[in-house]
Structure formats: C-alpha cells, structure tokens
Image 1 (cartoon, rainbow, N blue to C red):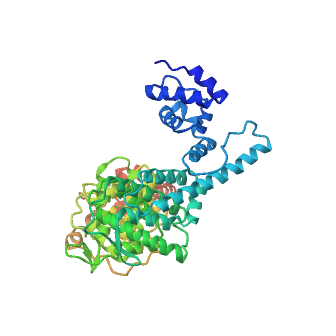
Image 2 (cartoon, one colour; image 1 turned 135 degrees about the horizontal axis):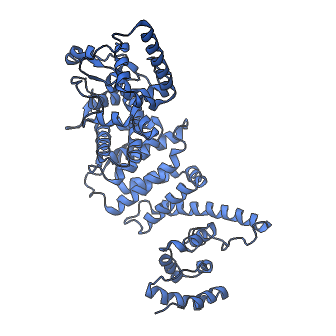
Length: 492
C-alpha cells in the first residue's frame, strides 16, 4: 500500500481527527516509513493510535526534531496522565507577551511532570507484582534529572532520596537489623531481570541528585538519608559476583558521589566465616571493589570512563579509613623485594596503575597517581620508591612537591608507622636508579673526564631542565638516557 502523505497532511491542517485516525491505522498496519513530514504537532492531541504512530515515526532521526521540543514532550506527558491542564503549542512570534506566558506555563508543566513521576513511583513502592510501567517511570525520571539540573534539585527537595531509597529497598527485598544495617532476605529468589533494570535506573537517578552536593557539608537529615542508601548499596556490592555486571558500575558511580561520611558503612559488616578481614575489620566490600578495579584494568579500553570512578572511590576510602588504606596497600603495594623491573613493567595491579600515571588523559593519570600517593600516606620518598621518579614527577610537579617536601591533604589523618624495607630491598637499595625505580647495570660517571668548567655548564643545563619540568609535568617523559644517568649520580 502506498501511503497518501498529502491526504494525511491536509487532514492534519484541517484538524480532521477522524480522518487522521483512519489514515494512521492503515499506516500502522503497513509499518512502512518512506517519507517523514514535520506536520506532526496535532498528533499530540489524538488517541492511542496516534501514540503508536509516533513510536514508529520516532525511529527515524529526521522526525525527532519536532518531538523533542518542550511543548511536544509535555503534550505527550499529558496524554500519559503525568500532567494536567491545557495543550501546549510552540509560540509563533517569540517577541510577544504570549511567548513569556508560554515559558512560564512550560516551567510549571515541567514541575508538574516531575511531581507526577514522584507520585507514580511512590504509589508503586511495595506493589506485588510491581507495575509493568515502573521501569519507564524511573527511566523518564532519570532522563529528566540528567538533562534538566533544576528538576534534579526539585526532586531532591521533594524528599527524592527517601522515595528512591524505599524503591530500592522494594527491589532488593532487604531486611533491616537496625536503622542503618540491612541484609538481603536469605530465602528470597535471585534478583530478577525486571528488578535488576529498575535498580539500575534508581542508582542513576540517585547519582544525579547527589553528585552536585557530595562535596558540600551535609545536614544531619541528609546524612541519615544517604547512610540508609549506603547500607543498601553495600548489599549490592556484596551480592554482585559478576564483576562486569552493569549494576556494579552504577553502584560504584553512586558510592563515589555520596558524602565521605557515608563510606563508613562499607566497613560496618560483621565478620563471618570466610570473610575477607584485616585487623579484625570486615573487608568484603573493599575486596569486591578491588576486584572490580582489577577487572577494569584488564579490559584495556575506555580507561577514563571505566576507571576514574573506582580509582576516586578507593582513594577517598583510603583517606577516610586507616584500615582500608592498610588493606589496599598490602594488596596493591606489597613490600618491595624484586627491583629488577621498572615499576610500570609487568601485569600486577601496581604496575598497571603506575602505567596509568603517564597516560595521555590528564584526569585519569591524576586519579591513578593519587591512589598510589595516598597508599604511600602522601610521603614523597615512599611514593618515589614504589613508582620511580619518572612516573612520580607528574603528580609531584602538579602539587609543587618536586623538592621532596610532603604536604598532606586536609582530610587525611595518617598514622606514624614507618615503611620498613625488606632484606632483599636493602641489599640492592644503593644500586637502584631513582629515576627508573629499578636496579640497573653500573654506569660510568657521565662527568668523568670533564673539566670543572664543563661540569659547571652541565649542572646549569640540568637546573634548566628541572625548571622546565616544574612547569610541565609531561616533560619528564622526554628526558633521555644521558640525563637519567646524570640524575642518578646527583640524587645518590
């Protein structure tokens, strides 16, 4: 059947609803899309037939433009029962007072839309079985809070964290031991695919409404709300044995956006037989996060998107908790014994992270360097010992620490325990090149045979190189072997 596009257009212009419906019913049966015409605005006032047609039409990118305007989307929301009031139209004359009135009306309608979604999500909490459209309600809420920051703030002010926490609790079927400690129902069946999809959307929405304020000083009420979220997030971390699961990715993102006070929940797990523990503290959650980071390091693509959240989360956890830092240090930076390889060589977790410290992406290399630096208690000597001066120079230059001084973070509180060297390391310590971080064959003194004047000129040249290095953190990569040899002799 050949679609009578001209007939459809004329009916639309005349607003002949009955004829439009007949045409669209035929169109839907054929499901053929040869040409798209932009006259689709009045379809928004039609019935379910029109909505089915729009679903088909929207698969073609050429028809999306008239469907993503505020007025079109709000009309669709009205048809879905999310808002009430008049039908919205785009102003024909942007310079009129009518335009200002429309802007006000659209703002009010968007506020109604988010309120309508809040009501629907709240009403669906605890329903068994859950509504078949709850996933789409959550998906729409996520898109609105992602694309409209003012709506994200509105959701937060409308007790959104508590509502979404209750929705997450319903999906997980958790049992509360006390106000801030919960566990999954041991007799409940595994999390279904539908529940899994809803969980992902809830995590994404919570991220949107907490990320902008996670560095601010939270109120007592907000801390109580978010700690309750953290208790459930902890259960998600513990239950996800599939480390490539999408929920784990969104769980890490949300944890990285929560106030630092809420990270205490990760360690608030009673010791059980077979638990990963350190100094009597349950490290199951931290261990799961470490395994997740290792998997991401092994994947080798989209490093920034995949690694930045987990690197930041582990770094902040180490700053906040001594037990976490010491546990991760034992796992990532074990005592040095074999120093025959450069720190960035090999397949260990440490070597993979050290390689990222010279990555082309500035954010990623800073995140990687920060984690190692915090594991070293922000001690420059120890940091250089484990990474080599060449890899450490970027972070040291950024923080103004090339001279060797140590400046601790305001939030960091490190113990005074020393970093004792192993017997194997002590035997080789004098032969380690501090630039490369490994034992190298004995090299002749590069200044041997130079006159005093030549030595003075060489010293001046090295000073200029160091000065340039302090202005450009990437310059260290360009140092040649000859300069490396000079630094070796000068730093010993």
